[in-house]
Image (cartoon, rainbow, N blue to C red; front, side, top):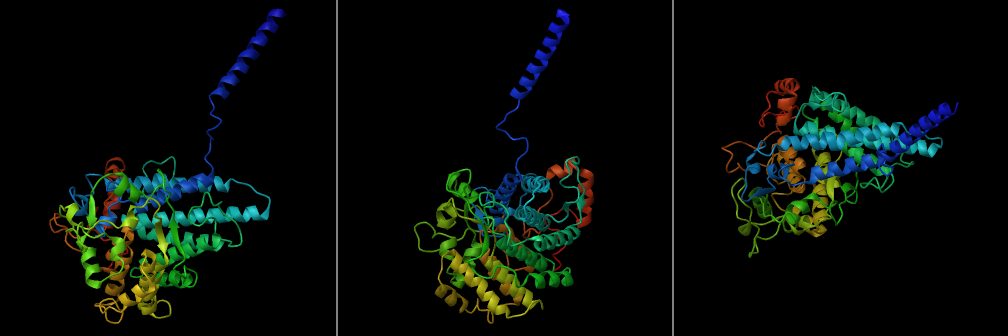
Amino acid sequence: MLKKLTFALAIISIVSCSKKFDEMNINKKQPKEVPAETLFASAAKNLNRQVATLNVNRNVTKLWSQYLTETTYVDESNYDLISRNIPEQEFTTMYRDVLQDLNQAKINTEEETYVLNDDIIAKSNRLAIIEILTVYSYERLTTIFGNVPYSEALASDNNLPKYDDANTIYLDISDRLTAAINSLNVAGGSFASGYDNMFEGDVATWKKFAYGLQMKMGIMLADQNPAKAQSLISDAWNNVFSSASEGAYFPFLSASPNTNPIYEDLVLSGRSDFVAANTIVDMMNSLNDPRIGFYFTYAPNTTTYVGGDYGASNSYGLCSHAGDVMHTAEMPNVLMDYSEIEFYKAEAIERGIGTGNAETHYNNAITASIEYWGGTAQDATNYLATTNVAYTTAPGNYKQKIGTQAWLAYYNRGVMGWTTYRRLDYPVMNLAANAGGELTPKRYTYPINEQTLNGANYGMASSAIGGDLKSTKLWWDLN
């Protein structure tokens, strides 16, 4: 009997010790599941960093928009995507660091249970806001690449997702966006301010941003699907940002790792890789544009603005540089602003969508941009009186007038400037000095990793869009 008791006590002791050892292997300070709010905040930060960055390993659209050009190493200004595998960085950031986090934030939020009505409303609002940023992210991917993984993109058990038709994706995410907008309750709560760094939990402003995204998507569809474009734009018309005090800005901080990535690229790197491009500087000089002193510095030891030849090896000491504001750690990233909305409205009116006067919205857009960068209302008035700026006398049709001025206003917003050029065919871009006559690309090519690891789906996607080439026009680019 004693032997049996001793053996039983030994077994209990072993089990007890095993449990203690198991507990010792658990880091109680490391949660098993990251909270939805943290995932959302991380996704928003990663999205804004990717949109903002000037790092040539990650995002070359500020170069391809011909706002800036390079000095010693000029491959990226001459449209080389392969040497640094830039498309892979875009794919990885958007799918792994943004969309996966947003998807998990959605899953975790859906699992939350509440009793109080206010909490239930706040949960619904958080899900809608997650959906809005998800739509924004897929919209970016389709306008950069064309067909991309979508229906199978976030499945944890599928490392080789198929590519979906970009037009089909666009229509689906527009429906998802509409549903998200309709589910927002502006009287309710959402994310706490520490997790929503864009709007501090303000649901009404999220709704205006979402309607602005809807208007943007309508404009993108205008040539390809006029009926859908009209529906989206008309629905959004009176619900978007309505003054220059409103916009979607992501704040950065003064200390690493939360500074604006442009500050890291221009200041912390200690490098002199970028100068102003002659494409934008020459135009701003010719128009006496009051923003030029905010966009750029004088060329060293001069009182003139000098742009480097786009795509050439330029001397940092002879050209203008990015302006002082671009060298500040806390400069916010712009996802959308009032100026953008007003350009859309001017264009929509010219296309027969919406009511009002295109010139009024054009003037509003330019004025908002000038004042945002530090100019005065009088600066805007004088500029709009310039023959080549005034809507009634500026050269060309509405695409040239709006395209040129929107491109100027989108300085520091690379994808926006590049997309405006691709969509409206204005302004006229310079030929890159060392690109062998190659025109400004129409899209990013797919990542090399997709070609080698997901070859079958890559091949079908490449064939579907007309070839995995930089010159391949995307589904919305009909002109």
